[in-house]
Length: 307
Ligand SMILES: [Zn+2]
Ligand SMILES: [Zn+2]
Image 1 (cartoon, helix red, strand yellow):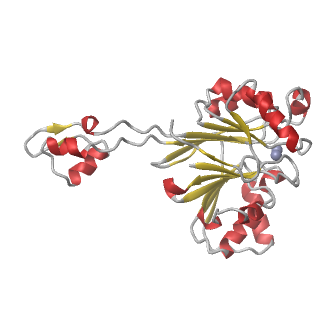
Image 2 (cartoon, rainbow, N blue to C red; image 1 turned 120 degrees about the horizontal axis):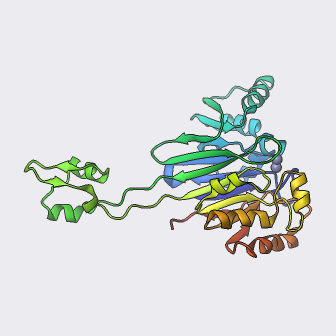
Image 3 (cartoon, rainbow, N blue to C red; image 1 turned 120 degrees about the vertical axis):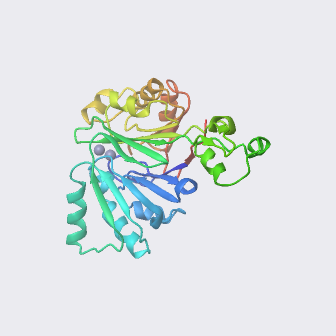
């Protein structure tokens, strides 16, 4: 489970930072990539990486500002040319469906794979046996969502030796116990799975927020997250400017991280007014409040480890 930043700039593409797109690499977990936003030229950025567009399974759009969606039609189209034939689901605010349908139909783009577009509200927007994704609205003038991706806890490893010592032979019973089922043996003995499983592996949580002012829902989405990705369009002291433009400062992002009890914070959506030398200062500002902060850069990767 890794986060890979494809674009980390605010508003317009800049030489050192393209507009927003973040890949959540779930290659070991499900052989898939989940994308969060697709600003213009996201597919060009992908060309410089090992990411295969056909691996993209889900795309979560935070909000409909151009710097977060103008790359989407091109990316979806190229994926078709590149042999992508598996379904893609796009989640986003109301309007994403019309944007994509109009873009694809006017350009007479025919995808060779099924595309599902889900216009979301708040709450659980996706769940399977591995992951749960929760969305909540933020404060950005236009509907903007934050996403909380929760990996479900994995059952502990099967203590096979202990089972055999207890006289249970390997077979379908082992799988049942591994799945947490209580099993009654032929001789009437009851095997409780808890006694024959190692400790459960706590799942990881990553929270990726769209553009936003400092807001309460950000804290709820980021609660106990292993990694919070928060915009920091402005430096500390620019709270008035940030509020006027519905964005956050470095300090505000750090306040969210510390209040929510996050393990790590990464700042993104950095304004082009800050040059390379200023980036370290931005990170240092956030570190005054939340120590484990870093600043995103295009093509930076963060591995999310188990606690
Ligand atoms: Zn933006
Ligand atoms: Zn925006």
